[in-house]
Amino acid sequence: MSKSKTKDIPTAGEAVRAKKRQKLGFLARMEYKKMITYPMVVFIVALILLAINFPTLGIDLQGGVVVTAYGIDANPDELAKYISDQIGVDVRVESFTGVDTNGVRVYAPVGTDALKIIDVMKVRYPDAEYTHSEVQPTFGKISQQQGIRALIFAFIAMAVVVFLFFRNLVPSLTIIFSALSDMTIAVAMMGIFGIQLTTATIAALLMLIGYTVDSNILLTTKLLKRKEDTIEDAYLAAVSTGFTMSTTTLGALFILWLISTSQTIDNIAIVLIFGLLADFMNTWMLNAGVLRWYLDRNTVRGGNE
Image (cartoon, rainbow, N blue to C red):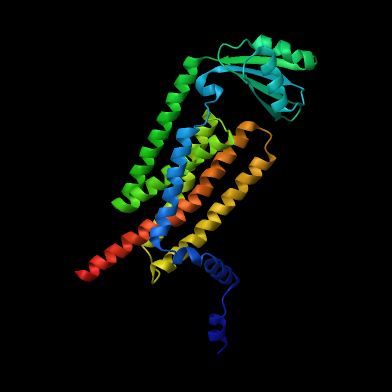
């Protein structure tokens, strides 16, 4: 008697999972046509945004001049306007905070006289310590080519692994497209928020491939090789685990972005956040919708035979 009662009482973990599945049940009840349509519309909008407002290339990808001033606490926008007015060239300024000091970096186009920028800044900040460097356009072009090549090779490698693992065209292509959509949306958001495309943000996009593909593989494996009675049960089991994985990663990235004092780390974190937010939609709506259509179609075919 006591044993049967004990079996009927759910554990704390089971209760939490049941509650989570209940909250996410609306996704399982959504029509697969809507699950596919909404992410596709967002993807098309992202492509339009990229065509209109592609992110600007950073100094390391197009060349230019960088002036670093240590011991300065200034408003970047106000300082950029001041320098631009004085030298007649549009510049970009970002502040940074280190362990021992803080300061600003001034980014200017190729051909700008770095010493002229320093002279202008010394009028306001005579006690600051200044350094400057220049990235040649040729080197920037090489960095561009290497970044593009790295993204292409990473995508090809990911596609090969996915095809070898599933050996099934429709689920494999859906995973690959979901990863492509995640990256496209992330780059479109970079353009909206004025985040430059640099070697650091390219590295973030490469990391995004790994971060986003694992949730898609989890969902696809759960549905294709399901042990649950129905597709809905398998989907809810996958989405419960997947949401936990993605939200913990998002939480860690948000904390990293919040406490970081480096603009480079900020940009990496925010690009990954953009991509992971897009992945919520592309995995649990687009990929799930395609898989449900694919499995339903196969079930109907099997029944007709």
